[in-house]
Image (cartoon, rainbow, N blue to C red):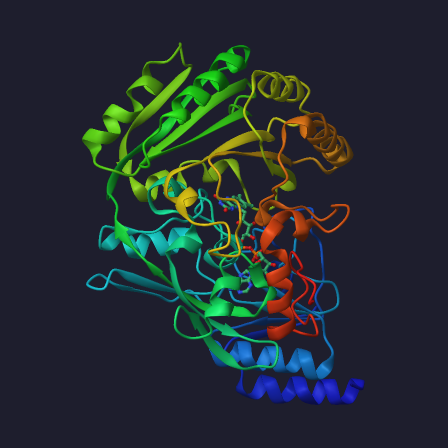
Length: 454
Ligand SMILES: Cc1cc2nc3c(=O)[nH]c(=O)nc-3n(C[C@H](O)[C@H](O)[C@H](O)COP(=O)(O)OP(=O)(O)OC[C@H]3O[C@@H](n4cnc5c(N)ncnc54)[C@H](O)[C@@H]3O)c2cc1C
């Protein structure tokens, strides 16, 4: 498309677009192009801040007809920066925050730009919830489409295990519904296949009675006790009921003290929760022990402050084969050399309802009981970037003997060797590549953890 036809197309779009169209010199452009990870510094040619489905359709059609590369932004949390693009069109869903809860049918529908804070606020009006991100500022869209680990995963499965239906704008501009009855193959694919098939303008979930008061919090111990803490975490998780999902972390306190922590969340009754966390509260001599009844929405925001927008981020993650003593010792040895107090190593317990779904039932294949290990490296000073990235790579390499084959697609970084999607999807990859060929044969949506069309 020539310069004149592109500007004609842009003018035509501007005449009917409900949201905002932003280019480099427009007020708000700089803010809109930024995502969560401050390391990502891309400059789209155009940012289409959509307000409704028609805006998304028009933006997709403009990109296709003008040969502009597309990135789709939901909550902007993808650490690899896949929500934005240099020179192309960023289709920004973040103004699309409508959420409708039907308490009788126990369903909730969220538009593609909602965050978990917004979703939980609405669903909790009715004492309802479904599994969502641990940090409230993460987007419902990207997190769900990749699988969605969260505090309620033992009780109600992953975010995708609660997904009833999605409305998608495909690469050819068509608007389709994907659920068990309509386009069931596409519905299988969007439950884990990320943004590969289309733009999810809305997602409908089953919601369940949760809280509003549940049991959560954290117990922080000296780093010198990390070995005992992680072994205790292994014991607690070995017999945890579905309602109790627990994470462990090596981290620093706000004053820069290195610590080891256990972070439980029990989504059942307060009496059951009190009993389930008793041993965690009683363990060792914590420097902080703040576990007890709190609103579900507060649990969801409890550690938000540790993940500020604009911090520099580089992550690596894999499911562990087992949490052996050797794995624990290696992890502690790595963390003793961490170059930034904002960086952490997190272990996420996979168990319960999320593991009772078949490997091939959805595109997300990691259904075994166990632990996901996440090097969540964050730092503030740009001069520390090389050290932080090097530490993450070296530490991840040191943990290689303990990791299994599976990787969680939503935690993949941008510099993986080989075909990281193959690791992320394992036995489901071939079927996903066939689906990609059916719904997006030209790989129009490729600014994501890309599944190449078969
Ligand atoms: C601080 C922090 C905490 C996190 N906590 C968790 C957690 O508890 N559990 C967990 O599972 N993951 C977690 N993640 C990882 C998270 O799932 C991924 O980063 C996810 O991609 C974020 O989705 P988003 O919409 O915020 O991101 P974005 O960067 O906007 O999008 C991520 C990807 O999804 C695509 N996408 C987003 N929305 C749509 C849509 N509506 N339709 C089509 N494609 C879309 C984008 O194009 C992009 O490729 C966390 C990340 C961060 C930074």
